[in-house]
Amino acid sequence: MSGPGPVTAIAHANIALAKYWGKAKDDENLPAVPSLSLTLAALSTTTSVVLRPDLESDSVSLDGETAAPRARERVIRVLDDVRTLAGSTTRATVESSNDFPTAAGLASSASGFAALALAAARAYGLAVEPPDLSAIARRASASAARSVFGGFVELRAGEQAAAPVLAGQDFPLVMLIAVTARGPKSIGSSEGMRLTRETSPYYPAWLSAAPPVFERVRAAVLARDLEALGTAMEESALMMHASMLAARPAIVYFAPATLGVVECVRALRKSGTLSYFTMDAGPHVKVLTAPETASSVERALAAVPGVERVIASRAGRAAALVGGA
Figure 1 (cartoon, rainbow, N blue to C red):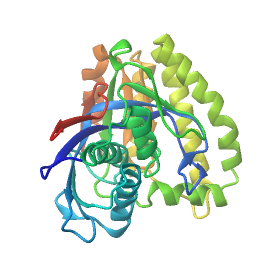
Figure 2: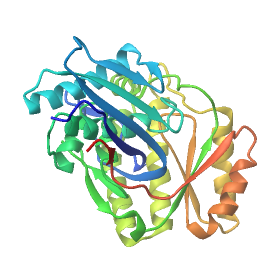
Figure 3: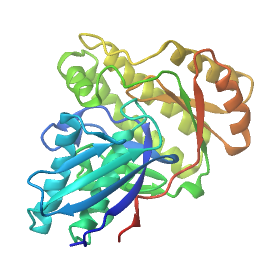
């Protein structure tokens, strides 16, 4: 096990190009459909873990504040999994911070639990390989399984761990994140998935349609084909949101500016600039484009009424230790 000092890890959020929405098994957090994502350099979480034999319970803080009960519960689940592997009962202090908004539809849980899995494993003295770290992170957040890796990453339906597909530098793209609202999203992803599964008449159609779209996304990534990738990526996002909109009550993540950004992207394409949108369980719009058109697309997105700012990102690296190793 580590000494008294902190073990710190950094991981990057990822945005799914082929969407994950729905769990095969709630208790294991296994995905019902395959997904493929791009890890982003511009969105990161830094997490420190310190073993504290003097504590009777774990201490968890997020962005400088005591974690809410639900968030604390998910963190402790990861710690318990690691403690079981390490044969330890020692409690820990966890401090985690994001350099982007938390719980706002920007995949903070993905980077957060990937960083936690790595920092905790090292703090408890485990030499865990990336696939095993991915499986640990997945139990808290399925998308976190992908943030253990850099570049383009897949998580197959029902799989315990994610796997890399292509290094980011092998298909260099820029993702522009149009931030369209402030504050946390209206309903968490886990609850949204449950509600969609239980009440949406379109959920079975989503389960059927998502795998072939995933295969198209994967083939386009391997072929380095932005047009094919973007077309399939948009279909995946819109199908996912259609299943949510048909839930009872409807799950509507869009902000007033969300559709404005979508129309802006379509107008850019009509004028000859290849750019494509995707949206997660939140109001923000992520736009994929080539490096040579990124600046002009960023300016266009920033001019859309209601867009608060635009974050530009290249592909990010795998989760890594940054201190206390």
